[in-house]
Length: 403
Image (cartoon, rainbow, N blue to C red; front, side):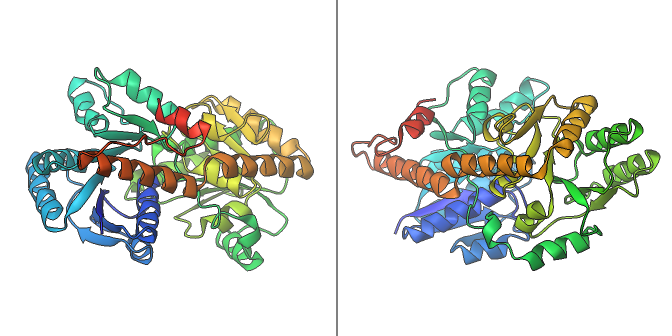
């Protein structure tokens, strides 16, 4: 049977990791062997349950010597395991994969999962590996435009395959009340309190400090209703100094009675459903951004920053609100707006958001389009007539593939 090798630095948490497992699951369902080279992590068990096979390798390192050593190792894996396609999802291992793919003559797919900021030509060149695959997947229309405007060359084949949300997992009807109660207890919230949730790993560009300052502004101005609890949930990933900075900002603004700073939430479906409003306050654009579509899938109104993939997954005024990134006053105004709305209006926004995600961002759609691309590349690699990757696609899918 055909074998596909995906490469991702770790399997802890994040969009690249989730997409890796989702694609591995789809591959095995189609009788295709799914290998994943990674350093492993808490999601390794999920990969195994999906039918994927983990090859533990030090693929996260950016050291040139390690990149070259990994290239040799990948080339050996490609030959011995008869790999048909290698799919890289991060920059350092993508350089190794590029070298290995060229040595072995198989197609390389890269997925542009992030924005990969560059302050100079050397970093821009380093980042450019993500646009050097035989096929380059952009995870949003915004990302595709970013790729085309950033580099001095055009990718061989650029297609937009948006990240997929697992609508079976992120389904309000499938979350038991006991799961929601357990999350609220973990957050030390009272039954009648309305919760504003900002989830995401604890790193500065995710905007946790902007969120704290917006809450402080509302309280100072008397615009924060009673019975509100704000929850900042996320994995610190070793950024202890930044966690202390968030805690200090909470204390400085006398918000200890209002803001809960908690860690990683394993049951995110229940986490979203435990909240009344979900916030994504990223100050840098996210290529796709998991929080807005996942929260919308759970029927929750979303406040997100007006850049990156959120412009596609949030319908302003219909499923949520968009605010300028890093703008404390704008975020405070959006929070005050939604907090003042009646519950039936927030529920209506949630239903609109769910319908939007169902129609455009299901994990099944992402899996289907990715496997269609793999098949087209495998046919091309065998020097057979290459089918149109868009054949049988919807009109929207054809439009994305011609980006």
